[in-house]
Amino acid sequence: MKEALIRLLSSMKFWTTIIGGLVTALGSWLASHQLAVSDAAVQQFAASCVLLVSILIHAQGKTDQGKVAAKIQIDGSTAPSLNQTAAVNIPVVEEVKS
Image (cartoon, rainbow, N blue to C red):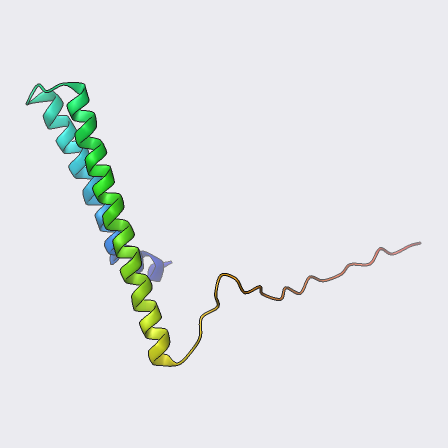
């Protein structure tokens, strides 16, 4: 659990999501309360922020994918592809007749 929490807190995707959400919320609140702009402008701003955050998260995911691929090439190990199927041993329970 501790390792998962440390990995989450060191994730660029996690912090991009958190900061993007805060910027979107703060910007929308400022625009609607302090700047007195139309609701359509606030919606466009929020949509732009969400789009930007989505692009950043996707780009960071691709970067992370490249890091894993480079590590696999250096280690010489192979990672299972999504097309490979794993053998699953399912225990067979026979019905006992009395």
